[in-house]
Structure formats: structure tokens, C-alpha cells
Length: 77
Image (tube, helix red, strand yellow):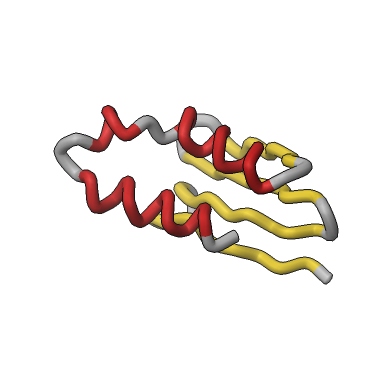
């Protein structure tokens, strides 16, 4: 059974979802600049490490609430 989690969705071209496929976590990132990227993780700690590198807190100093919401969505996976 596949369970899909939405991390964020700005519009139909800028969104990120994580699908739990058995023991794999498949992250799909769709952006209007880069198209679609897919990453596969074997564990939740690996996913969280990637998320912390992809969304560094320093980049969200003016909008810390958005960073908190994104990290909360990752932790709920």
C-alpha cells in the first residue's frame, strides 16, 4: 500500500510529495524551473538529513514559520 504525504504545494508546478512504498520513501519535487526530481530514501533519518540540507534554516530567517511547517510535514511522514 502506498501512502502519499504532501510536504508543500504552491500551485500545480511547485510542490513536493513523499510516498511511503513499503520500506522506501520516494520524494517527488516538481518545480517550474527544474521540472520533476525524484529521490528514493531507505530510512526516515536519511530523508530528514536531506530535508535539512535542502531547506537550511538560514535561508528562512525572514519567514521562519514556513520552515517550521516544512520540517513538521517531513516529520509526519
